Image (cartoon, rainbow, N blue to C red; front, side):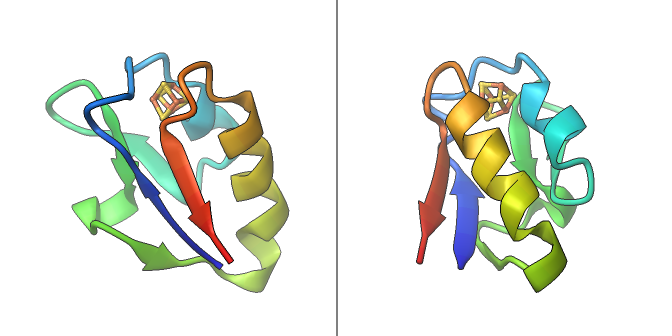
Length: 67
Ligand code: SF4
């Protein structure tokens, strides 16, 4: 599973950084990003559920999950 944040869709609500705090962070632009500012990462086994929850909870569907 891979994930990334669509910056043009994110509104910076911060929800994903609580649900999957090990994967997402708010960047200097006030929008979410994968930690370390990588465009797309491979999600570790232990973070998969959190990333799925974050994606489903995102109010603007800005988190992309690819199987
Ligand atoms: Fe952005 Fe969605 Fe994360 Fe909110 S939950 S900060 S809108 S990616």
